[in-house]
Length: 199
Length: 199
Image (tube, rainbow over all chains, first blue to last red):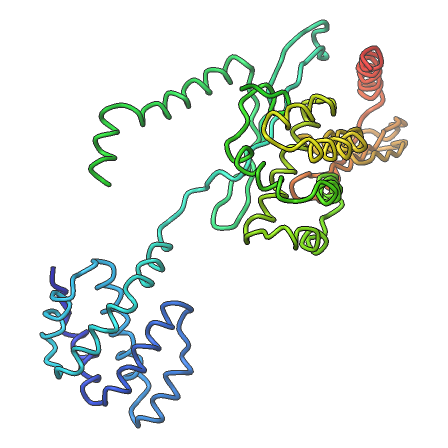
């Protein structure tokens, strides 16, 4: 699968031919660092002064490299495909090899960073429960009404929320039965076939 | 195999696996570590440095100290939860493969601290918001925009409710007229009498 680069992208990356390979290596390192920790515009200023170009050009170059790396890692393209995609840019042999090495070295890490960007639903953290029996109320004395009070602790991106629920034992048994049925689905032939194919 | 300290259920696999780790420490040191774990279960905090020193000559791998603390916490809190006496606990632990002196030491520490542990577990049980304090004030309304001579007593009640999740107290204020207050007081007295017959 080839990466298709837009004209603007090619223009941004064209800056890389004007500098020597040590600088491209440095840009690659900066790009990966930005993916790990976030951008730092001051680095653009410093590099612009050293290379005697405007900081916009530097920024476009680094961002172009970052986009190239993330798109490649996202689609998990093979070495040959990456080389062919970069060939389009008309870089020197040495530059192509450098970019390929940069891609292969950092692919796994970039994929793990991209994996953390998915939206997350609130997930289970812990559960507290309590069994009570209601013996009397203002309107009716001499009752026996058992109830289970449940406090569900949920975790979403580090924020903890709680939900308080109350149920009678019959509903609780039904709930347990439904959940056990859901777990039992994993053992059906249909699910086993799919799991086998994924592995 | 059903165990009383697991609530008449099977013993979890990880507990079985870690019993052999417990056997690696000498029984005297195990009793001291139990003391630390019991302090932690009662909410007084745990001294990891001391436990590290106690396990230093047991040739533990990196995760073993945490595993020891985890399995001891489980055994002690589970035994307190199901009100298991120390002799039954000792025989069940020996059935799981813990050597006799280790089981005896563990159960002696458990027996000393069983009631305070159960008390602290009781306070940690699920409670929804609770009433912290009540303050009141009786006013006499002299007159109002509707009627020139009113001359009625009025009770101001302020309940301070403690929110368990956020740990903050919130005030909740209301005013009650004399008749409504008499009804409220009568109903609460009936509920109080019912509570007294139960305790």
